[in-house]
Image 1 (cartoon, helix red, strand yellow):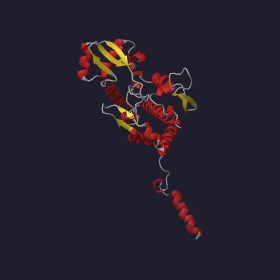
Image 2 (cartoon, rainbow, N blue to C red):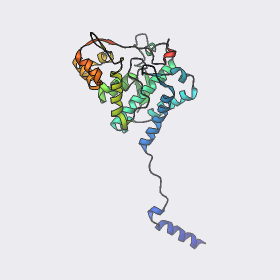
Image 3 (cartoon, one colour):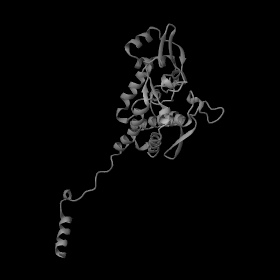
Length: 270
């Protein structure tokens, strides 16, 4: 019997490597991230709705009343907090920050329950809104929404396109997209988001006096060329043929507009 055991042991040691039990492949980190974003995708599919004008609105109230999905949102954000974005590719990191910003904003509205606008959430008397509040911690750094958007995203990436990726829970903001941002489709998705906003009256409205455009193009003019001509060139890059022709017929900005009302379903508007 001992001889048999010894022979079997020797056979195992001398067997070809392919015949021996091998450890499985290392975890596919990209797949893990895709699975993580799938949780955010599910929440968007449940609570994001398109209104009659084609704008996306989020049902914060329905999420507020669904404890399991509130916990799922917390888990999604916690999962992002556990990732070091410096280990991601450039496009994956952009998607990481944009998804984090949007998920944290949704959670903030659900938790604070402002009546009409995100600007009602103010940590102190002189605050313009909640953007300076430290709401998450990534790689050991406590971060506010302002820090994510301005200190990280606008500094590291093409600033103009950042504005189409982050959503401030307001009607006039570029839409919260129905799918999470993902590195592998980032360029095409950002292009489509910019095109969708600019060709919507929230982005550009042509009047007899010129163009009435979103205040985004005034607040962050430096991101769009630095002057009115630069803004118009940016708009023309994404305008569909009919709008582009109308812009060229009177290429001047006559005013700016922005609606800070919550981007919740129309039947819930106050």
